[in-house]
Length: 256
Length: 243
Image (cartoon, rainbow over all chains, first blue to last red; front, side, top):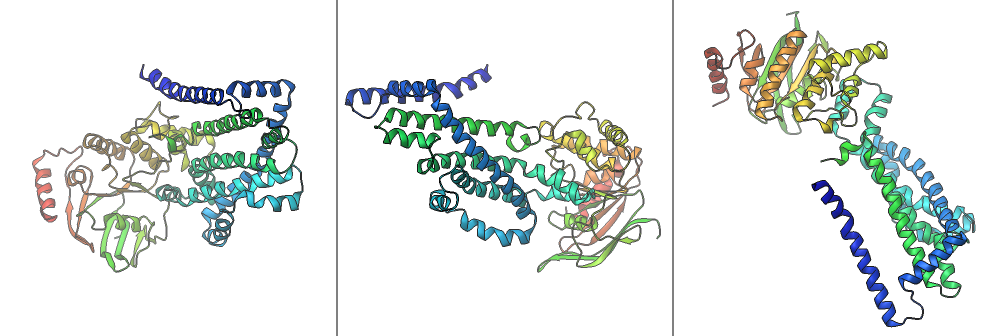
């Protein structure tokens, strides 16, 4: 009974809150007679038309593709580097200052560089996504390795296991929960950045859709629709990453 | 003496200006159960960590079977207060962790034998976060016994458990030790635990610590703490500890 209650408590209040906000939005726009800002109804109609002629899916697909590639490459670079930096002190002291310096540079600042290097192509946004998501994942992995509880390392050395076994059966699983946290942060940033990147270049993607809708005759219904779709997809991406937290080998970190 | 398993010779250690162990000297015989009790903060854990090879002594040496200890070894497994059961492995994989040699089926059979010995049959696939504190201790014991170490180092192994579970684990440990012969070095602040389990009890001085007194426990197992001789011993040890 309590379980059902808590499930309801998790779903009903946020749904109500959103419903109230939409209602307020609708009433305010209807009353103010704004010629440009759309009502929720107009947004839904505009989005429906785009969905029906298929262009909406093309834009979503284009954005997701760039995030997949950029985030995927960032993951492949960040995790090994993070493990190495966490495990080998000299690597940490050598590389960490450089990465800490690169990390606070906004991906937006890289846009001119990206255009210079990769031109107006798919590579520019992919590069920007890579740059923005590689550092949080690397930092999280490094911290994860450096904060492994010493008693586990001691136990492993007590049993005299080889370095390889130590790494594979103790270090990696001990860090896995931190890597998953890093993935959540990295994917969130990647999705944030793809939209910004697409506003500058290219002719596809949800970011492009926003700029194009505004430029092509102030279609604010489509601007708002894109924003909402971006938010929903971001939520779904985060939810998908959170499913990893259900793995038996990482649950220990999230229970209690 | 040649049948000494562990020989601690003039061991001293400090952390910076703080002297922790001051010229400790004692031996543990093969198959003997020695308990070390001392006031809290006296350096008991440091002493055990040095003997087990996890920390280095400033001077003096520890010899196991005559060979100088230079680092941890699977020949002497440490069981500590907070435990080190890997939370990302299930019970069975934890017990399998230390096992090498033989084929997988043999290793599995051995793991299961020790899981059964500590009374965890049926929990092979359970993860540590699903187990109680007492069960976790059993996993740790099974993992240690499974590699058949000659020595067990126990650093207040049951002190994180509640009194009842702690008592239960002492009885279990005694039962297992009757089946499997091991040399055991136990650090504890619980005098009754020491009397219940040990063949010999060393009382340490406050820091910098060394051996103050040695008590022989010549009582047959299973022991009853209500036995007048045990009570007498308890009084004597507590007196040594200044109580």
